[in-house]
Image (cartoon, rainbow, N blue to C red; front, side):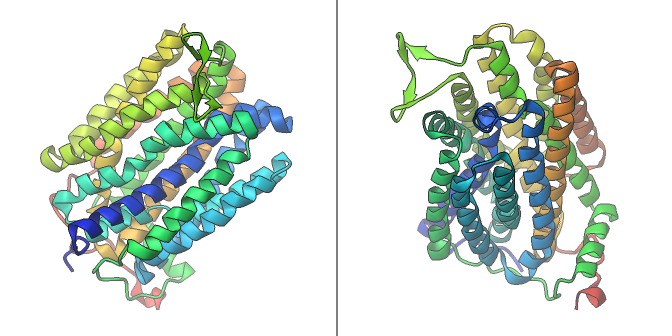
Length: 429
């Protein structure tokens, strides 16, 4: 069935805003772990190595939950998944306020990972259901600009709250914002008029479907590999960047001799770095999606990979003074945003609507596994060889991703109408 936009321009705007707010909050509560890792370690008395588990365990749980929810979302519709996932994440984030030890905090991140896994891919799948392919880059770009907005608003404010009131406060604040998103989804987001899967999900049937997506024709396996390499490289690069910068430079920043603040809260070097990088991402992300509607997705993805590889390789050798970190991080976030919206828009067209939830959940799951592996390996590299080892390994992953995109990822020309893989209906009913 042909995808249709929500019924009016006002409804379209309200729907996009609700999805944007959900993405903004989900991304912020995920990314905030990285800039506050040093604060968590100091407050809970945990060394640098174990802190990476907060990223790895969250990613692995999210991946598992995403794989479970993908086929279910194809069966029950994306709106129900958005409601359940946002509600679950509200509860999980609020419980972070009770974390009084590293083990307890790790358990709360497990709960948050489960909630995030329910939501994983749901917003992009919704866009794929509701918007025609020729406008999907535009819609995806605006919805996914919630991620860089998390860098602009969520991360600086979250770190400021953590510095002033302890590491628990950002998660409690994000629980409140997610509650607003939950209400908006419940009240203004419609269920798209799209054909849902008629098959009842089973463990065996879902595993067979995922296997067929990985090995079948149509570029779905290459897309999963691309997502893994992208987030593997990101985990290597970003997770220990704040830790490295903390040891290299003083954190305090001032303006005209006065401490820099946001809403009356102290703002330091790490927070301002994420702020300026996020501003660039907010500008680039929707424009990249719109541009990809006009010229194709793959050219932008490849250009961003090559640019990001150069900047990543140079980072630890060029940043010899604190101010140099700003343009380098701006470039990193700009190149990363240049590929995100085009890649996600491309993925929505590789399979028909009745498989979109499963396929996007699969790609996000392998991406989260990549983040977890990257964070774990990054901790070993950082502790053993120093941060240049992290950036070198990340550069290799970025170039491998470019090779996969160039050689094996197709450039769709429109909405997929036929399944590129066999759906084992006899095992799903």
